[in-house]
Image (tube, rainbow, N blue to C red):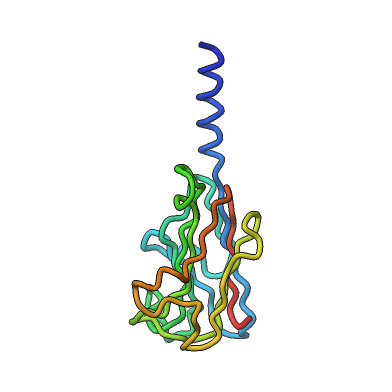
Length: 157
């Protein structure tokens, strides 16, 4: 009984310990890195850390003055950062989207760190093959199955 209880406590602590950070690098010399999570502005350039679980459906873009609230008219990064719970395919996933009403605005890239190091993508022009141009372009999604992975989003790389 004691071992079972101890296991449950350790499991609950491990679940609560999930943490993810999104870091921005803006090399453009203009604009404001913007992160929207849950329909709210979560960051305007500072690191955003969620230590109460995952980041679901976050969107990031460089607000140049021409972008809508959800990045319309600009290059956008879409991300979900979560620890995998059910095996492969249940962890983090990130992509760059140019699906209208989004369009190329500045070179944009992302990369995972603290896990899946080196996995990421860059989009340097309106026809880049590393971005979604239509919703069925799921092949450009970059997955990560590591716990507590973080993300860096870079503009004008």
